[in-house]
Image (cartoon, rainbow, N blue to C red; front, side):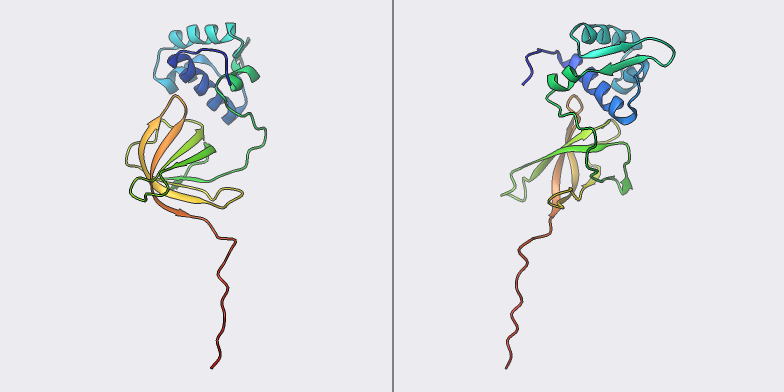
Length: 183
C-alpha cells in the first residue's frame, strides 16, 4: 500500500501520465497530459514539478523530453507494473479499441442479475466512453470470460468503467456428459 498521500488532482495527473506512457513508452509532454485531463499546460507543469519532488515522475530534458512515471508512481497508485500484459479485447459501440488494455475486472452483485455490475479497470484513456455506451470485454486469458453491458458510471481518476452487466459468458470445464439410452 502507498504511504504517499496524494490529492485528487495529483492522482488524476499521475494516472494519466502512466496511462499515456504505457501506450507509447516515450517521455510525455505536459501539454499532452493537459489535453487529456482538460487543464491548462501551466497547471500540469506545476503538478509535474510536485510529482517529481515526490519522486513519482522523472523529467527528461531536450526536444524529445517530457515526463516518465517512476516505479514509485506505480506503487503510489497500487498499480502493478507488467512488462508484457495479456491482451483482452474491448469493444466500444461495436468498434474494437486498440489503445487500451484491461488491467482488472471486478464483479459485484453477481447473485442478483438486475444489480450485477462490473468494474473494468483500464490502462489508457476512458475520456471517450460515455454513459449508456455498449461495451464488450473479453475473452479473458485464463477463464475465457466475456462480459457485455452498458456503461453505468466511470471513475476517470482510477480509469475505471462501471458496467451494468447484460451478459456474461465463460466456457465451462465441466461439460455435461451425454448418456445415450438405447431402447
